[in-house]
Length: 254
Image (cartoon, rainbow, N blue to C red):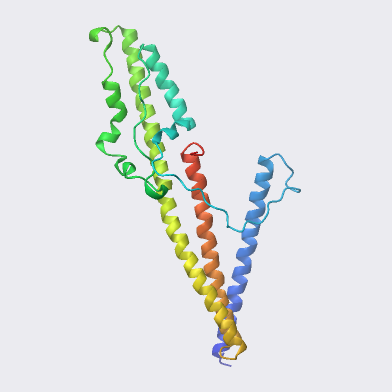
């Protein structure tokens, strides 16, 4: 017998329901694994450790404008590179110099500043080496082998420090850009979910009046759930980006 339209729609919705149920089980298993990992990190038994269900209403951190690049000096990789650089300077009897570029990480709204757009321009790439070249030569340029070796160590340490700073700036710029784009995406998903939720409410009213079938109402609910899932995914990406930004900056910016 030939299936009617309603039967085809019914089978399609039932298939979608099965797929959604399977995805829910996979996500629940992933949640349990992450929860157990957190339990180990805090020193508790996974069997008794439990997190409250998140409602995604937490306020995401907002960065102030004009945040200076000097906050990146707290990063472990930059701290280690700077210690090597200062040790090389001390071996040559050179006073500590300003080994950090003077620029702002954030502009209006806490997003990436225009300074970061010049991150890999010629002037930015040579800032550390320029500072090194400006140092006075020892003994009027006459150096013994030990001094020449120490000077070579300084050049190497300066290059390594410069590379660490540039990597840090690039990571911050990436996360600030992602923060801006994800905020726009989340707002769009919020509007889409609002429209789908309103459509679902209207379909429920029409169902009660007999204007539409049960399957049409279920289809409207399915679209609402899909929009809500996309919104949750966008919000989750925002939280992950916020964590990555804190890591890139070496900690909180307050």
